[in-house]
Length: 377
Ligand SMILES: Cc1cc2nc3c(=O)[nH]c(=O)nc-3n(C[C@H](O)[C@H](O)[C@H](O)COP(=O)(O)OP(=O)(O)OC[C@H]3O[C@@H](n4cnc5c(N)ncnc54)[C@H](O)[C@@H]3O)c2cc1C
Picture 1 (cartoon, rainbow, N blue to C red):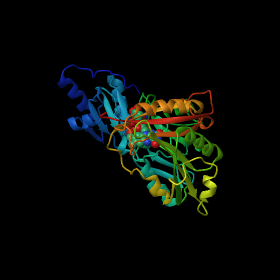
Picture 2: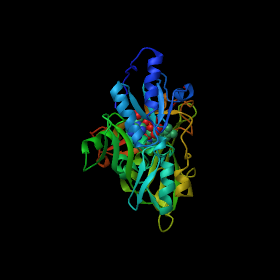
Picture 3: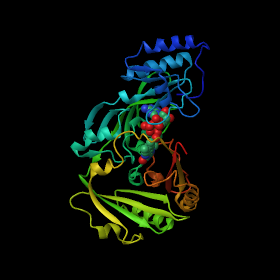
C-alpha cells in the first residue's frame, strides 16, 4: 500500500474534482474534502486530497481498487497523521464492531479503540494480555506498529498475541491471514505500517483479567539502579506489568521511577515480598490499590488530542544506560514532563514472533525507549 507521492492524475482542478466525485458516489461511508478534514489528516509536508470514512469493508475495497486503477496513494489513519500526499486518507473508525467474543479471543473491526474492546471483554473478566499505556488508540493502528506495553517482557507485543487478521491487499482483495493461512501476509501486515495491506478485522488473544491491581511507584537515585531493578523484576516475574519513567529535573538531575503493577488474584500481594531485594529510595515509594479497569484507563479512554509525537528506539540492555543518559541530557522539560515522560519497556527478543518489529539481535533483552516530542516544539 504505497503512500509515496503520486500526484492525482489531471492537472485541472475540475478534472480532479470529477474523478473524486466518481469515487464518492460509489461509497456508503463519508467522503470529505473540507479544509478542516484535510488539515486534520495532514502533517507538515503532506496533505491528502480527500478523507474517506468507510462504513464497511466493501467501502475499503472500493477505495483501494479505485486508487489502484487511477494511481492514487491511499493510507489508513487513526490518531496519527496519514502522510498521504494528494491521496486518500482512510479513517477506519466506522469499522468498530465486536464480531465475536469467546473465552480466549475477541474478533473486532480494525477501527475500534482498545478502550471499547475492554468495555466488551472486562464484564466477562477477560483482557488482552498486552495493552498500550493509552487506550484511545485503534486496534488496526497499534497492530500496524507492533503494540508495546508494560507486560511485553512476559507476553511479547500485541502482534504476538494476535490470532488472525482480515486484510484488504493493494489489489483490493480481502484475505484472511494467520500463522497457518497466508502466513507471509500475516507477517507483513502486523508491524508493517500499512505498507502491505489494510487491516480491517482482527482476532486477538484474551486471558483472565484481575478485578484489582496493586500499583507501586518506586523512585530511584540513579538510572543504573532503576535499570537493574527493571531487569530483575522482568526476569524474575516479580510483577505483571512494569515500565520505567524518566523525567528531566532541576539542573542536570533527572527523576527516575519504576511503575510496577501486581494483579490481585486471590488476595493482595504482600508488599514486602514484591519489593524485596529492590534498590529504590525508601520513604518516597507509594503503593495503592485500584480496580484493573481504572488503572488501565489511567490516561483516559479517548484519542489523545495533544498530538504528541513519539520516537521509539530499541537498544540492547547492556547499552541502555549509556543511550538513555544521552537522551536525558538532550530532552528539555518543554518536551518531556510528567504527562509525557520518557518511558522504558523491557523486551525479551525470544517472545517476539513476527519479522517486521525489528530489534537488535546481539542480546536477548532490550529496552524500548519512547521519547516524546511535542508537535509544536
Ligand atoms: C497518546 C499515545 C500513547 C501511545 N502509547 C503507546 C504505547 O503505550 N505502546 C505503543 O506501542 N504505542 C503507543 N503509541 C503509539 C501508537 O502505537 C502509534 O501511534 C500507532 O500508530 C497507533 O496509533 P494510531 O491508531 O493513531 O495509528 P496511526 O498513527 O494513524 O497509523 C500508524 C501507521 O499504521 C498504519 N495503519 C493504521 N491503521 C491501519 C490499518 N487498519 N491497517 C493497516 N495500516 C494501518 C498507518 O497508515 C500508519 O502507517 C501511543 C500513541 C499515542 C498518540
